Image (cartoon, rainbow, N blue to C red; front, side, top):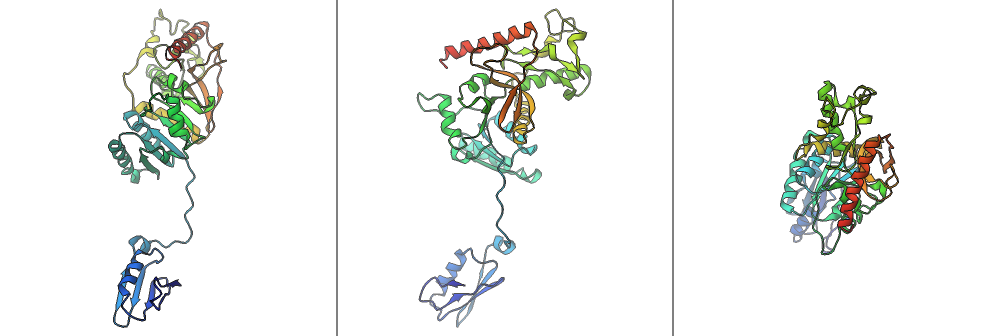
Length: 366
C-alpha cells in the first residue's frame, strides 16, 4: 500500500502483481496522479487509474514489464584494470586483455576526450562477441577507483614543477592505494624508477617482449614452437640490453655446450643477429605481452617474466636503478628475482647496462 501523493486525494494505491487500482473521490487530481505514477519505479507492470468518469491505463517501463526482481543482483568481484593512454599501444593492451578474458572491468583514461569516448565505444560494441566485461572511460581519475592493476602506456598533463612521481600518486594511487603499476611507456626503466611505489608493486614491462622476440627467432631456426624455446634478454630495455646466451636452451640442452661461441662476434652461425633484430615500433605484440603479465597477477599464476625491477643488491649492483631480470609474478606483484648464473661477460654487460641508466638518472637529477 502506498499513500496518495496529496492529502486531497481520498485514495491509496493497492499493489497487485499485474496492476494497481486507484479509486478516487474525484477526478480533479487525476492528471497529477497519472504523472506521479509515470515517474514511480515501484510498479512492476501496469497501473489502472479509476475515477467515477473514466479509467486511465498508465504503462510502466519496458524493463519493468520484462524484468521481475527475485533478489538483488550480487556485485561482480572486482578484477579491474585501468589503462592510462588510449594510443595504439594502450588500445592494443586493452584489446588483448578483453579478448583473453583477463579482467571483469576495463577502465580507459586519457586527456583527449573525443578519442577516449570513441575508443571506449569501439570496445563496447564488440562485447556481444566476447565474455562479459564492463568497459568505462573518463578524463577523471576517480573512475579508476579499485583497480587491481594500472597500466601506464602514456604520460599525462602535469602541473608546473611536478614530477611524474607526483602525477602517479595524485591520479592513480589516490583512488587505488593497493594497485600494482605496470609501466610500458618508454624509457620504461627510468619511468619505473621514478614512480616511487614499493619495489614489488611497480613493474616495468622491460625486456619481456625482447625475450619473446628472441624465442620466436630461435623457433624459426629450429622449426619448433616458440614456447619450446627458452632464453632471456636482461638489462636495459634498449641498446645496452644483454642476451643471456649461457642460459639459452632447447628441451634443457644449452646451445652454448654445442656452440661455445654462440652470441660472440666471431660466432660462425651468427646467433648474435637474433638479438639485434628489432622492429622500430610495436603495438600488438606489446599488447599480448601485457595481457600475459596481467593474467599472472590476476590469477596468481607465479609465472616468470623478464621485468624491469629495482636490482639493487642483485648480481653485485650496489646502486638503486631499474633493470630487467627474470621475476616471479603473482597477485601481490613481484615476489622473487631469479638469480641467473651469468657468465663473466654477461655480468660485465649487465653492470654496464646499469651504469648507463645510473648516469642518465644523475643527469636528470632523479
